Image (cartoon, rainbow, N blue to C red; front, side):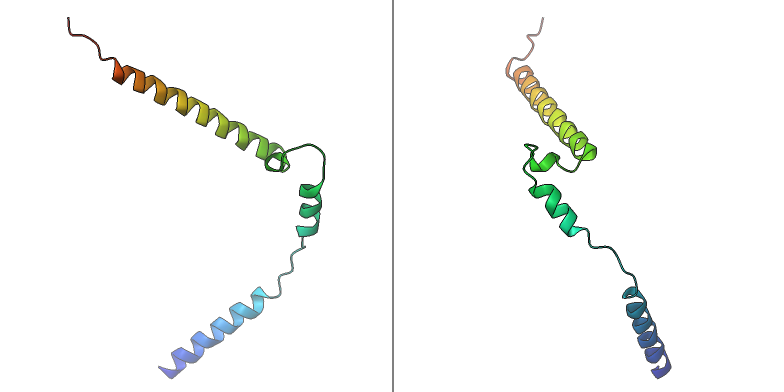
Length: 83
């Protein structure tokens, strides 16, 4: 039992110590500069092409869904007459 506990503690310490060795470049200052730049582009589109595609897809789905909901509401409001 004690051996298992010591092994678990050793594995946990090894995992934590190896995780701290990884160094990543801090990109926050560059992103802040990009998003705070006054170039007339809305903030939600400053991320580039991916943001523009996501925005257009969202708008398409929103407008299409609204139109479909209105269509279905109109069809439900005026039921077909039996012949």
